[in-house]
Image 1 (spheres, one colour):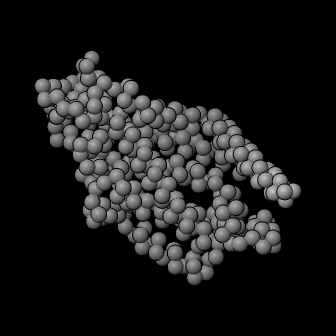
Image 2 (image 1 turned 135 degrees about the horizontal axis):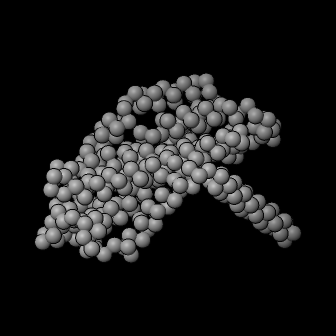
Length: 299
């Protein structure tokens, strides 16, 4: 009984320490954000689009798929604040629901890319030697393709769908992430606390996960945020090329592709979707750049 109580006490202490560590990390992140006007402006823009995506059913009047052939290619009116497209669909509604698409697929694809990049970059930087050579040569082969061309090849081969868009962006982004993780690992593996962990008898996997990965989180968080912006841009580009989400799914890139040939009759669908992509990408980049600039002051 005493042994069980001691074990439960240790588990509780570890849990409390973990929560304290998370809370401290959030406090440090908040301090970095509010110390940078650039990061604050970027965060406001991103949160505005997150709000639109979450509350799209409450801030729109129509369905994104609802067609009204009596009101085709309308200019902005009180009933349709951004007008209608060539099928009579409300442009503002499709922009709002399109935010859901891009703000879900973007972070998911980058998260999957980071999992792949960590799985490749950590052992490459930690073990070096032939392990590093093998992994790096595979990544070099992937990086030989222009990014958008690689996405086009993958999606053309497997077909356009949300899942395939995520996989394509993850595969295209993983090599750059792996190289960043490798460089950080090669630097951190020489630190004294890593040597101390080896003396304690910690396994290589635990050293990589407990010592190296947490101490490289700063550059990785900034890179993660930047890549969400890149992912949003590429999702829009794939949609414009007809390789994004299949219609009639609300998709900003698809809206530009559908409306660019009819701009003389109605510019609002293209203009609205384009401005949505631009503001989101700029907001994400400003947020990430502000964090990076502020974090570099403390290095």
